[in-house]
Amino acid sequence: MSASASRIRKIFSSIALSFMVAAVPALNGCGRGNISGSGVVITPTPSTPPPNVAFCPTPPNTTALSAAQVTTIVTQAVTRAKAMNRPATILVTDREANVLAIFRMNNANLNTVITGGPLGGRNIPSELAALSKAGTCSFFGTTGNAFTPRTASFIVQEHVPPGVSFSPAGPLFGVQFSSLLFSDVNPKLPLGLSADSGAVPLYINGFPVGGIGVELDGQYTLDPIPNDNDQSDEEIIAVAGSRGFEAPTDIRGDRITVDGVDLKFINAPAPVAETPVPNLAAEGSFLTIAALGATGAPRAGTPYLGNGSQFSCGTLNGKQVRIFSPFPNINPGPVINGQQLTATEVTTLLSQAINQANVTRAAIRRPLNSFAEVNVCVVAADGTILGIRGTPDAPIFGLDVCVQKGRSAAFMSSASCATTLNAQGLGAYVTRAAADGLPLNGNIAFSSRGFGSLHRPFFPDGIDCTGTGPCAPNAPGPFSRQHVTFNATNPWSPFNVGLQLDAIVPTLTDILNNYPNAGAVRLPPAAYRNGLQIFAGGVPIYKNGVLVGAVGISGDGIDQDDIIASFGSAGFEAPVAMRTDMVFVRGVRLPYVKFPAQPNLP
Image (cartoon, rainbow, N blue to C red; front, side, top):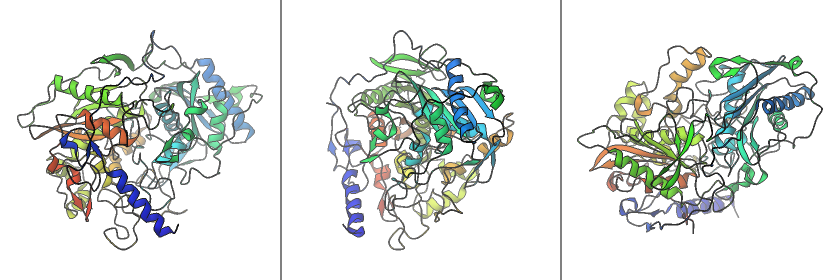
């Protein structure tokens, strides 16, 4: 098949897959290029979901790393690092990304450097990179899937698979800017989710208990081609540390297929038994860093859904749910133009989403035909969190992300969007949007998918600029950075995407400048207090034609997140005429939401 024919086939396949299905008339025609009313109507039927492995345990879970096990993990990693003559900073977290130990080997690099973007060239303490790496494994790990920063590197780049032109951006493009230390939801990771290889998850008897992260090379970046055969010393050391605590083979990232493409997990040899260093103290020291919770000695992890956990079990209209202790209540929203979401309505929205999750076939979980495990939030139009619930085994990374998606959908759909961005010094993006016919004044109902489609380095997403048609060279979406050719001297950087990053650079700069004794921090506006998010899974909600908030979903495939958000919003959908799939930019119809084929379990 010629390259031209292959490209045409990809385009037509994309169009065919984009014709969506809908639950209610207001959702018809939500796919890219669809005409309103052309969608197939699917009515979810009650079904008993398969018994996913990690329903709420009774009695509460007690599985967690002990202090002795943490010492073993660190010792194994140090032993391998010494054999390789690669002194490193090694950090271990529990499943909730609490720091259990930080060990700095003698002569290890004290700092690492962010590559590319507005933060490029900045020295960052190595322990911050190690924490974001280990925490990424902790936050992605469940009983149904185990991911690493190498997995993340595969799904956050400008193309997926990375390096393959005329393919869309990674499904989680932008996820790296979540769970940051300024978040009002789950502030745990100094540099957000990491795509820099050098960490693996830790499991005990098939149950996720944390992650190990390693930093040594002084470069905080990502692997531009994570499926080649190059090996990372940091990853080799992390894998060695995980011996005896490895993720089950069947749920690792390389057993998960997305759109017909296998994800990646690690590229390192399996760990083998080695004679441990005889005196760990002679090789370096455990650090005491109060700001990160490091106590100078290994400590035991917190059992997820057990004593001391931030999460507990509950029910919502008969379904098991996970409750996040900082937001245990379900609250009414503020009165907006005479309209208000009541606490009962917020409960209904959360319940509708949880019900749909329980019958939606998961995309990134093993075994096959598991139901989707997700985090669900409802936010008010001003960004106030009204309620958060999740399924029991939902990956923790989605907790912060679901709020970001909800807030992004509400903020971009608000009448004050342009005014707020201008006040934050982000007026260039307002100007670029206006040039594309997008006034950002509340006249358009933006889903997070619709917003994200305008935040891609190529517009339309997946159509590389060729110099002809609506996509001319260096013509990205209006919220993206200007596209350039990346090479050895100008590497692609996860810290280089456009509005999403620029909106939080002042806050990140303040935190990094003042670590570990943070001073005054310039926080983002309340409307996007924990940052913006630019991939699918959030929809705005309206009551009697008034924007009153949004539903955000995160934890599974983006099409699964979309269908759960859409069914969750039933009764409060955006008016059809306002949705982004009724809007054309440079002759291209924007998407709103997209559902997977045959989404429901039998």
